[in-house]
Structure formats: C-alpha cells, structure tokens
Image (cartoon, rainbow, N blue to C red; front, side, top):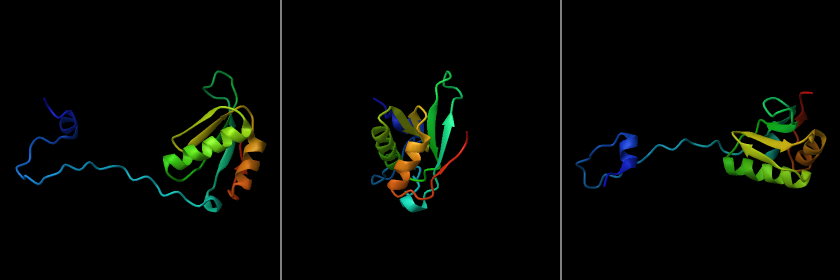
Length: 115
C-alpha cells in the first residue's frame, strides 16, 4: 500500500523519525468589514443561453463568508443562484433589490454597475 498523497506532493522518504510532512495551504484573504467592501452589482447574459443573472463582484474575504452572503441574497430575493470564485450569481434581474439588501446589511460602498 502506497501513500498516494505523498507521491503527488513529491515526498519520497525522510530519515528523521519525528518528521511530519506539512503541505502549504493557500492563505484565504481575511474578510473585510461590510462597510469597507466595494461591491459592484452587474446584469449579465453572456454564456448563459440568453438567461439573465445578477452578478455581485468585488467581495474580499473567505469562501465561507462569500457563501453566507450569497445565501442571504438568494433567500431575500426568493431565487436560486451560486457563490464561488469571489462572485455571487443571483438568477434573474434583481439589481435594485440586491443593492437595497446589501446597503441594509451594512455594505455602504455598494454600487449598481453595468447595463
């Protein structure tokens, strides 16, 4: 039985009996306070088979905080969506509603951009 994870990381063997292999995990940026976030709300149709989505871009923080904000927006708008790679997608044209929700949540530097 081989340790497949060691092979993938380039570790072969260590003669030190106290050696513990440590992987480098990429550091997630610390989540900025809501008042310091500069979020932009866009309307997008590209690569979505003509369907309209509302995009929220510019979030700086951990993936879990992004997921939480995405969940809040989806719940308040009553639609589906996704939160990944620093963006939140909300199905449909909800730009005005999303900006209103974000401002009430303390994201004071939020702007509606795009079309």
